[in-house]
Structure formats: C-alpha cells, structure tokens
Image 1 (cartoon, helix red, strand yellow):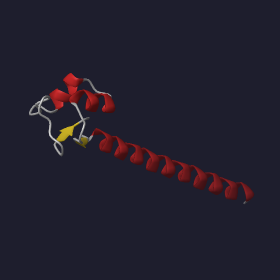
Image 2: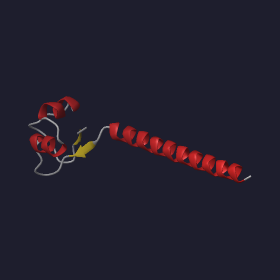
Image 3: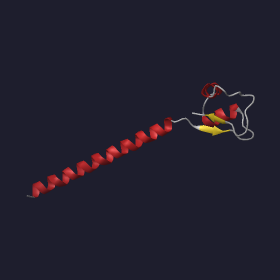
Image 4: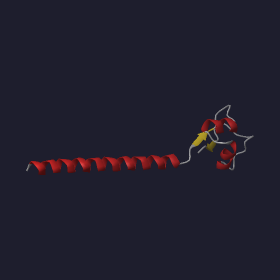
Length: 84
C-alpha cells in the first residue's frame, strides 16, 4: 500500500510539471507572435530618419524599406512609421 501511495504522488508531480511546462511554452509562443507584429512609432518634434533608425536599432535603408511611402526629407510630427 505504501509503494502505491508513493507512485500516485510521483505521477501527480510529473503531471503537474508537464502542465506547467506546456503553459510556459504557450506563453513563449504568444510573446513571439506579439514580437513579430510590426511596431509603429509616431514622429515627434526634432526627429529625423537617422535618429529614429538609431533609436530602434535599424539601418536607414531598412527603415525606408519598411515604409515605402516615407519621404525622409519631409517627415511630419504625428506621422506614423513602422520601426520593426
């Protein structure tokens, strides 16, 4: 009887660890999906394309490629640009 009780405890412990691991995997996948979503930056006074690119760790060329309608010499306060 004592061995059976120990086996039940071990089974419950293993099941619990498995469920916790699955929940952690699900949370990590949700974060990856959120991280893959494009990030939008709203242009502020004093911003330049170079400053925005530097701030988000992308090249100017990549920033322009993400925003084909962006005219780097005519950015406007309140304009939205993709930064990732």
